[in-house]
Image 1 (spheres, rainbow, N blue to C red):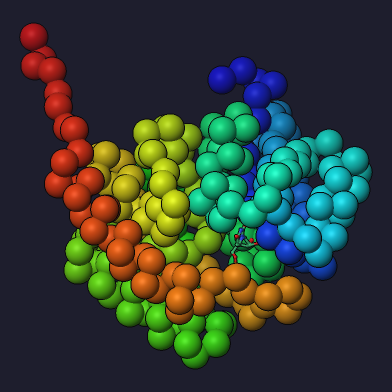
Image 2: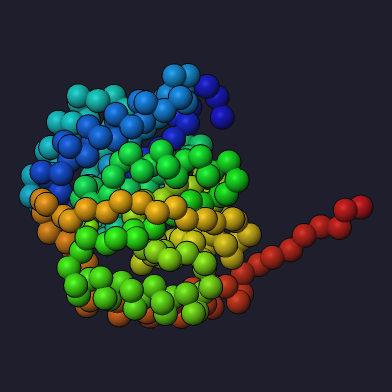
Length: 243
Ligand code: UDP
Ligand code: MG
């Protein structure tokens, strides 16, 4: 890494978040600008427009013109959050990867709580101790987390929390498939990376609509568990002798 390469890349998947974009960027820029690393190195914020149709695309282009740290990529249609995160990562150059949603349900300032733990861990996950979602989503997420823990023993309370920070090596090693962004802690741990969690704040969605509910998340992610469990059993692990 050279001094001119970004110390951090923030990845944000965007599907129809028009009214959230300006306040989101304002808070992300404020937080990252305040970080000591930003005195000597740049950072980048990568927003992947996942086939938005509510005017987010135009708003993203407008914001990218205003802020040189902001990079925008537009998919030709909607592919889902895992694709958006994967594409964002592949276009990133940061030593540290910060993942956050574009819906303002997380607090950008909490990034500063997670970052220090990267000195001892490869992946730091947020833990939404007080979820501010509707009852159905809260219950389905709690069931999914419990079941996931039984199968994967990933040791975190909130594997699906959208606020996470990674050492770049983790995402270089983990291969993503649709839905796998919900299993980052298990996928990282199975490759020998260390994982921890930190409580973060959570807010109700004010603008725009949630795209995930019981039908397209709970049941799909229970099915995905089979794949994760299989990968955990079959992952390649080997070491050379010292001499
Ligand atoms: N998102 C996306 N593609 C999709 C659905 C969602 O990029 O097909 C983004 C969305 O804009 C948000 C994040 O993924 O930034 C999480 O989506 P949402 O808030 O709707 O999910 P929830 O938090 O309700 O599970
Ligand atoms: Mg959300």
